[in-house]
Image (cartoon, rainbow, N blue to C red):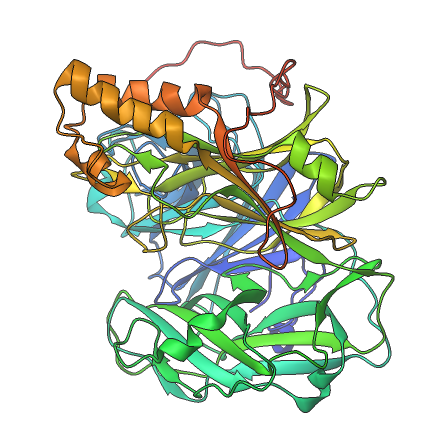
Length: 580
């Protein structure tokens, strides 16, 4: 289908988008597809919606913080009873009722109807400075849509919660960095499912273990990876990861193929957890920078990997057959630097916890100055990519960068993070981290639906806070994470027992002590202050798992003497009052 935006595609070219045009399916049925282009100079996104809806239907497309149709910002396309078409900037209230915005910020619009598909195009500034408009930011954007039968006689107070609606997560503000040329001797490893009949349930994580090519007995660099999606299954395949199985070179692993959460899954493949490639819906191919490649292979390299595919099947269809997967490009000709992956954030243990009923509870993990000081080379490292990670209650993640007590521009931030949309993102600005710099990774959690404390740990119902940073040149520092010091935590448990008569006890373990507290807003606030003010236990770990020399058991956090001021908003201020 041709694009109104670009006027570059003939019907026979529809599978290959023009450079700089991105797309994502908006629903699992494949009814709605979004295309868009970015103009960073003008700070404008041009959007095109293709919807297979009956003629005369109205369409709404826009944004909200986490995909709700309430408190949403929508560009609303509709036909009145006289047959005239309109595109209006609207917003929804907490109750889902629709209102016309006094400031109209959906511009340059047009539409067409071709072969049963309504095509709507319009443009929108990243930030309009209108309090009723969503600010399009770096990180995850929740694109919301709605549709219904027309014609309409007006829009005011339309109840959007009763309409057909949905949302999709994507990174709207894509990196437009140019494609890096690959070596002439590059070869590709493709790991896909094999006509997998997808289970008729809403969410399936499907795992497949494969034996890798014998050529990886020699060291290679990964230079690029991309998805391979079965044609027609674009709405089904939600995200994918390819993991290396980190065992001894001679270890044989079972070629398991089945649900990742199955009781039949062999314990042996728990070693398949080092990420080689990751893709989420709407993501583009990932290119390593010209200076570096991710090292794989070698004489002591285990030749097994595992593909994990997340299928999203809300209609519980049983007729999906899928052969999607990942394609990784690698070369035996090594680039100047080995790329490395470093873990920042919190330890995977129960010392850090989130009380129940918290709409915004932050936890911070520290990579302190002393750790980077003893582990990084004098010239520092260059960070070029980042994959943020929490479990189910994480709603925001960021990593701040501190040098000599002064905060400098952040390494990465996602204000609308979702655990259901994780990808390795190429940073638009490579970041130099020097010895003595500190990196503070803060995750914010929403536990309003949880009846009791949420503990740190590996289970999906536990929580994590991690930023996997991709950098070069590779160093021995692999883990730079923290948790509250043991002594501070034991003192806290003793005090809530003595002062507030809680059932904590030195005879109980950490998890049971947290669970013994009857949580209320005051106790949650005190715990938050404890985490901020207490000394920490540092994991300043080498790639062999051992800590760098020194006592890391109760160290102070790196002070931030001069925080970074908020970035100014780049938009034209509206001076008028707002009305509903």
